[in-house]
Length: 95
Image 1 (cartoon, rainbow, N blue to C red):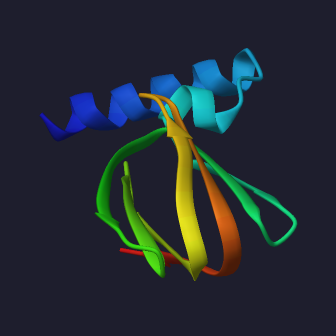
Image 2 (cartoon, one colour):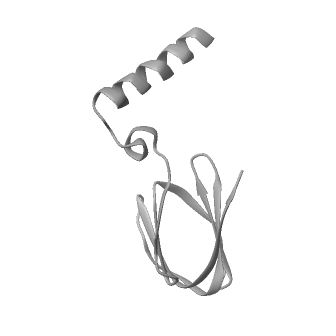
């Protein structure tokens, strides 16, 4: 069974390299885009764990993301992306 998982992983990696696919698309990695100190776009997240004006905790595929700041507000969210506004002081990746 382990050989099948290794083969699947190696095959996927080969396909990603062959087609020059972006890792976020191929592996479902979380993308965090920061605009200055007041805007944050998170793509490929799984859910909102905690939402307060001082911090927002988000579950991604491989980690949790903690956004710390002041007057934080989720401007909008869909199944694929989330836009956060406010004074962003820290972005912490938790395992």
